[in-house]
Figure 1: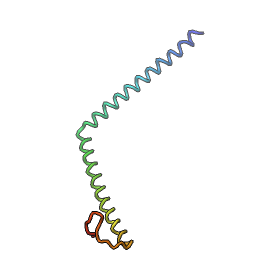
Figure 2: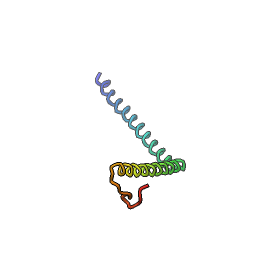
Figure 3: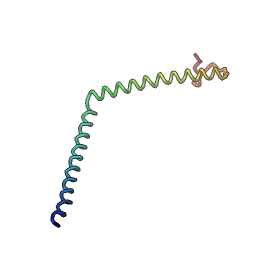
Figure 4: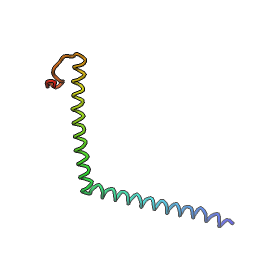
Length: 90
């Protein structure tokens, strides 16, 4: 009976080693594939497109922010006709 009990932990250890080995191989595969994707032209083009869209979005948000500042300044009765950077209000 004792030999059977001793074999079970060894079997569990080898099974655990197999799982660990598979996990390690899967992680390596994911890392290699991610690097290939990152180096691809399609990824670079998508990155550039996203960057352009983000810049455009923030420019538009800045314009709206400026308009809202001018609106609230006029509404508060400040009366100044120039923005903070010295440009005249629209």
